[in-house]
Image 1 (cartoon, rainbow, N blue to C red):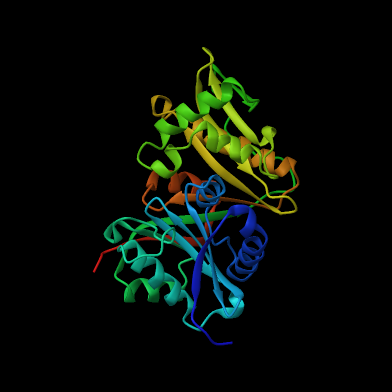
Image 2: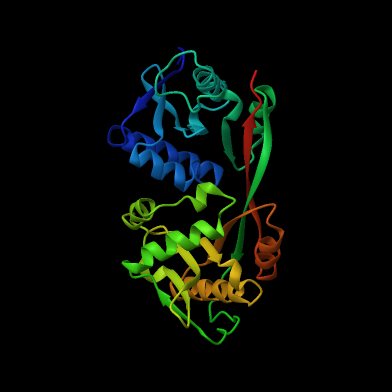
Length: 304
C-alpha cells in the first residue's frame, strides 16, 4: 500500500475501537502498553488530543498529544516503513506553528516531551535524528509471587490499615499524593476528577487500594494496586508515604501488604514503575526481590 500518512484528531468515542485494537496489538508485540495511564485519562477527558494516523484509509498508528507531551505508536504490521518518522515530523511541524489545528503537542517545540515506552532501538534512532535528548528514565520492575503467605514488616504501633471507601478518602488521598509527588507533577497533580475517572475503569477494586492512617486518623501512606481483568500480573500502581513519617518502615510495610493482597488474588507476578533516579525507592524494591523488566525513556526536543 502506498500513499502519504495523514494524522487527524478524533473524539474518544469515535476513535475508541480502532485505537484500542491498535494499542492491544502493539502491547502484545512490545510487551507493554504504548500509552501511559495519565495520557489515556487526559485523552478521555478531552484535555489532550487523540490522533489516528491513516495511510490509504487504513489506521496504521495512533498518538496522544497535548500539555507539551507526545506518545505514539505504529501498528506492528506497518513498522519498518518510515511511518513513525512521518508521524513524528507532522507533530513537530505543527508544534512549531506551521498549521494543523489539534495536531500540535506544544506551543513551543523546544519544550516538547516524548515518551518511548520500552526504549526500543527504533525509538532511539528517531530521537537521535530529530534532536531529542533523554531527560528521564522510568524503570519497570517485576518479581515472582509465592504460592503461600508473604512475609512482611509488622505494622508499627499507632497506625491502622484500611481499604479505600470513597468520601473523605478521596480528598485525603489527593492532598497526600500531591505532597508525596510534589517534584513529579504528572503524578502529584492528580485531582479528584482524575481519581474518579480511574474509579470508573473496569480494573478498579476498592479493596486493592490500601490506606494507612495514624492514631489521629490522618492519612500517612497508601499502596494502590492495579489488576487488569484476566491478567496474571498485578501492579503496585502508586505507593507513597508522607515525608513526615519517613524512616519508620511504613513504605516496606505497605509493600508487604500490597504483595500479600496480590497473592490473595491468585496472581503470579508483581510489577511496579519507579523513576531511575529515585535511588532510595529502587533500593527498597530490589531488596524485596524486584528486578529489571523494561525501561521507559522520556525525551525533550531541543528545537531547531
